[in-house]
Length: 187
Image (cartoon, rainbow, N blue to C red):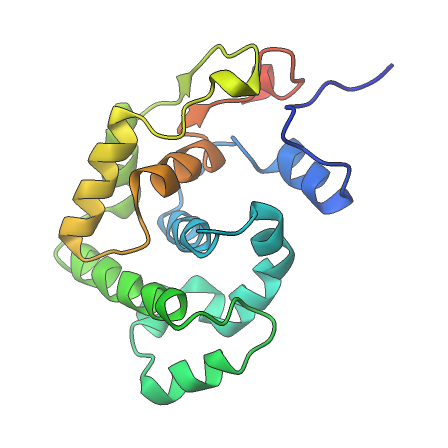
């Protein structure tokens, strides 16, 4: 019997594993949310599979995505990162992770919880959509537009409404597995 999955999944084993065990599963840990938001920003103009295949390299290059460490990166570190073939060597994207870490630190140092902040955009619980076909899934929603504006106001970048919606899907804020996908009921 064939397992039914969302139509966007290729036969790449890493992509299958990501779809089956990661995508759409609720994430509440602030550091993990920060990492995923940054990685989704790295995807801009590229396929998610490209970034997924480089994720371990990103984790090594960016201090396991600990914002307090990344916030201390200086120009010398940026130049070092620009020589790292294991990541996307786009200066704007490299600097965006550092900028986002600094924004994250300012936000959390002011006594705010990053996870609570992000989850508030969906009322604190998973939104279950009921899409039959992948073509029905929007690229952005009013919630992702609001999240994008709020994050930009805090100083984050590479967080446009489409990136924010992809992020919301990936971290399980919305369940956009199609109804025929075996993961829909597990989300």
